[in-house]
Length: 361
Image 1 (tube, rainbow, N blue to C red):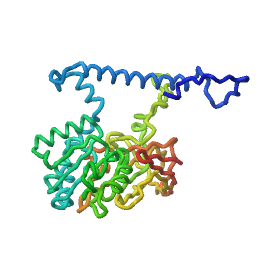
Image 2 (cartoon, rainbow, N blue to C red):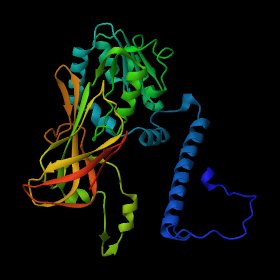
Image 3 (tube, helix red, strand yellow):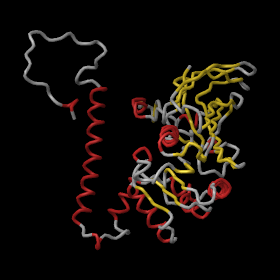
């Protein structure tokens, strides 16, 4: 790593003045940074050990019940895949959207194979050819096996690369007729929906192609919840100041099952973002939010949720009013509590990148 290499061969006559903002070599920030690198090296060492174990094991002797397989699967495949596949409301809505939206004989690209579910549903809905891409090699192989077990390998091709790495001619035989991209997290954008769609509609989708989803919207309300805030913030424990742990807290939006924790809404629900996925630039940006307040208190976060318009009247949402959804709500923490007074308004700066939501005063 270049930033750890020592520069040699140059002599200096006088020591450069120390920047007062630079922490001393033995200070806590320096030690935390060193510990972070050590933690990363430790993780890489574990991965290397697991790979070495697998390489020494003949393929015919490798059991899927082996502990090494379970550890690699647990590390590399997010557990939410199981909750997602058991979300019957989500599955039924997507299958219906595909049945209504895919023209007979169309060529379809599904971004994010997972188990291969949507690719198989597209084939069953009448697609003539389905390509589905998955950047996780383990999931891609699962999808291949599931597709093959259902006798659909002649219709569906699983490609073990991200969609941004696809060549439209070499990999797809030309631009596709339908793009399916249900790659959303609790805050809509965290799984890469914006850059994936931005790239796919320019390089992989035919000019008059069908987009599923066609639009996406994000909503939010200011919320106060000491219990939820403590899931990502700490001050003291048993009389000891342990607030340094906050340097390790999640700084982006993260999932929160809002009805699990006591909370109060301090503002009205407001629209935060709306994307026409076929036409909007889908670039990072920011805007000023004006939120009408409904109660006195101190807001600690913006709770967010999405609506995903799959076309033909099918809309998916993780609104707090839909507790059956496997998607939780998103929690976008404020840097410091924001006082509110009922009947007034507050203004916030709302930002979004390709993957992360943020809010500030």
